[in-house]
Length: 91
Image (cartoon, rainbow, N blue to C red; front, side, top):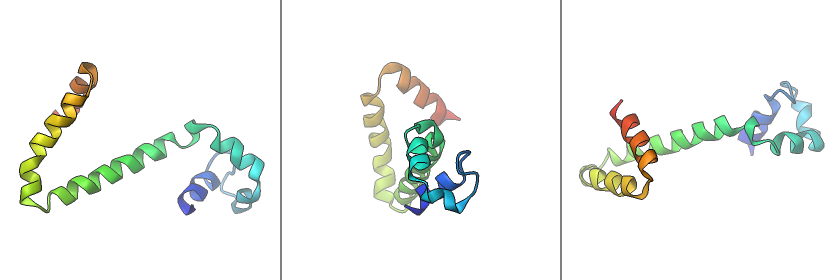
């Protein structure tokens, strides 16, 4: 909940004012527009995935299984998404 509050309070609507958190109507207006927090959610997804991959690095058996896991993931994707992901992985 604190993360959501921080995002809102630091938004263009609240302009850093802590008391803006008490304005339910303004908060719901902000919440109803996903563009206000989409980038923050993307970053959380990246952080979560990085943590999971870092944990895989702690286990030799998991590292051995990683290529199979990636192959299974790629097989589930449409060709355009698969190509895009493959290109990103090569960077």
